Length: 234
Length: 171
Image 1 (cartoon, rainbow over the protein chains, first blue to last red):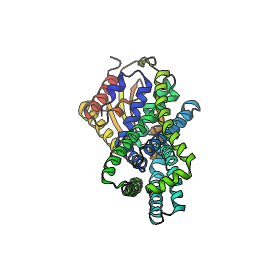
Image 2: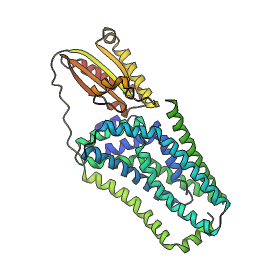
Image 3: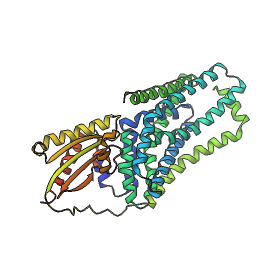
Image 4: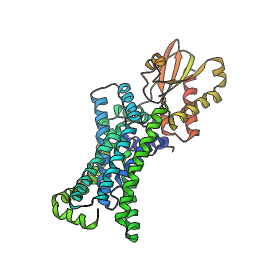
């Protein structure tokens, strides 16, 4: 992953910010949250439209968080060490339990709609699907704030200094967010495309979707446990 | 959700499906539009001139300090290992004579509060090179390394060059 050549030559900070976002998204440490996000985004895999909206809202959520951080550091002049320490603590301690809770809730909702697929509950299902898209936004907000050591150095150590010395630097965190959300959006759409085709051949779309929802919940719980174990180990 | 329930849902709640359709169109357009606008609006920025080294006198000592948190990840361990390798391999003589030192510091350990404060309150993964000349500290943060994680050769080259340049800056 040698991006230094590309970044070194680039005199367009916007492009550097986008590349930094991409590096963050595919680096080992933040990969765990991105897999969770990808799983979540691809939940309603039958409808590509749903995947694209949720993926976009997830990216917008990340843009919101990074932009707010950019504003409070660049404009309000809040000290980086305090913010960076707090958000890395948040990433270490809060994210794991939260993912487990979200995973369990998803499992429970899935179970309810499996057992009682009545008229009243199907409308609840609709509401949950609606919330699912808004949930994509909230997930973006949350995952962006949960800094891993590596994403912290890329954001606070590389991106923010770049933003401080660039014209229009205030916009760079938002561009960085697009870079971090793009792989989730693209792979979500590809996954949706693939599953839709395969499933329609097998004529088992609904069944596939139910299985996917359970798998997603398990991925959330699994990644949550992974974070909790990391936290307890130290 | 079966096809039947979905259809019923759509029939009952036309506004919802409209909202979904609008969102489907609007969200990607916003993202793409924003990206294009940003590139156009904030095009090439003036290159910042390289920071000149205005200190004088020979280098008394050079401290390589690596800051990390208690919880270590792949990147943190990898970066420390490569930095240590670079110092021990290419600056063995200086290391033995004490002209070059290497320290790995946990920023969350209270015992390290003084050194953390000295290095601009390091709060995340940070590699610093402090060139001491005439008893004065010249602290520089090495950030290029974070873009070549996974490419050990490039990583070592960056650290090696930084140390060499700092050691030979005045000659």
